[in-house]
Amino acid sequence: MKGRGLLLFSTILVLCSCNGEQQAAGKEEERLVADMTCGLDATAAGGNTYGTDCKGLYDMHSNSEFFPEIPYVKYEGPASDNPLSYKWYNAEEVILGKKMKDWLRFSIAFWHTFRGDGGDPFGSPTKQWRWEDGTNSLAMASKRMQINFEFLKKLGVERWCFHDRDIAPEGSTIEESNANLDHIIALAKQLQEGTSIRPLWGTAQLFKHPRFMHGAATSPDIRVYAYAAAQVKKAMEVTHELGGENYVFWGGREGYQTLLNTDLKKELDHMATFLQSAASWKKKLGFKGNLLLEPKPQEPTKHQYDWDAATTMGFLQNYGLAGKNNREYKLNLECNHATLSGHSCHHELEMARIYGMLGSVDANTGDAQTGWDTDQFLTDVREATLIMLSVIKNGGLAPGGFNFDAKLRRESVDVEDLFIAHILGMDTLARGLRNAAKLLQEGRLTKLVDERYSTFNSPLGEAIEAGKVEFEDLEKHALEWGEPPLFSGKQELAEMILSSYI
Ligand code: XUL
Ligand code: CO
Image 1 (cartoon, rainbow, N blue to C red):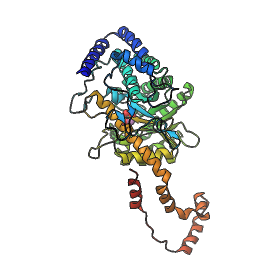
Image 2 (cartoon, protein in one colour; image 1 turned 180 degrees about the horizontal axis):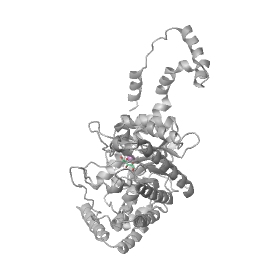
Image 3 (cartoon, rainbow, N blue to C red; image 1 turned 90 degrees about the vertical axis):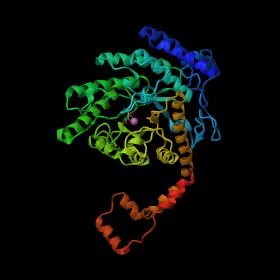
Image 4 (cartoon, rainbow, N blue to C red; image 1 turned 180 degrees about the vertical axis):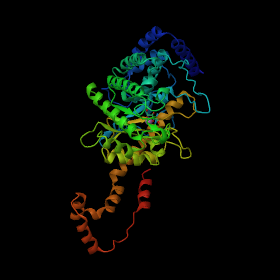
């Protein structure tokens, strides 16, 4: 009852303060910023690094908390049955020489967590968050940003990702949109002051507005190409302004619906020139982070050009945007996109890793019985273990990380669901990290793989791998050796080894 009373009280306060004009929003922002600059301290040690003073500040102004009923989420270990605790993710614990938080570098996706409304093609929105006033105003955008920071602090997560248009409303001109964005970025900058919270990456939303229906960089209309460039220019600028570590390109509409009306070569060439201009703008900005392409095979287009990791790397290579002499672009791989392209997440990560192109991961999962991008939180420990095998072999993901590009189910409408979903996703990857570290340390799978290729551990094998052996030489060896013996691939043994770590 007491909890409910507090909830009602804070709901009334939140509702009262959210429908004002910009000026009122400004005052509210100032007060909340004062409360909320307390939090994840860049220099402090410990899991959720809130000093007792900070806790006191929150308690004193508890009516300014958007989630008064949610505690700071802490590690309680696997035996805990508290849904608002970590069972496997222990931020400061060191595994293979690195803190768990540095292996995992978790990030919240603003668009799902704070703009997801539960609507689907058949039904209206289901989420009625107590802080929403039903508008897409600047005042509402400011409030959401404050909520974002409180959410991050309560989870002990130091990173977040955004599209320009989901944090600030689109105006009727580019100038107006940029001004809205500047307003919210200034607020985010204030909120992140004194904390270690920064964007993992920013991006431009180039798929929602009707102007982008034929594509952005691949639109047949030069005016759309230019509009998209102006939008990306600004989005890169504000990502840099906030100290973001990467910038992402997801080409939702960079593809085609039919080849009959499409000049394929022109569109791919345009996509490349657009990315070249982005790389050049990055240099002018002095932005040091990675530029990341996020593959997805289709949806919303029938065919998206960045189909999967291999296709995207081939495209980058072909246009001189990646490779030995140009490390400007890497990949942001999303697990649900991997399965849509007929691969596993592990496959996509390995493809990128072996060529030094693994930049960051959008951590989510699909549904085996559903053929589209369901963006669910990752809950499969086996999948998480395989993902973490790649990440450990990659030496981590930094400056990338794990961004929860995942949303609550339509039917999940409680505030605590937002927390539980992220806790579950974080714990699943943390458990995967623990399993993968043990698996690699004990070396049984590595030994099995090494033995499978052991015939190449010879002077001839080395010469072949160095590209120094011609067919005539190989023919001599083949004649001398005769029919090669059959030997086992040991797949079941490999699966048995993996299962024993899960
Ligand atoms: C869409 C998707 C995007 C990108 C960012 O499937 O994954 O949210 O991650 O634009
Ligand atoms: Co994504």
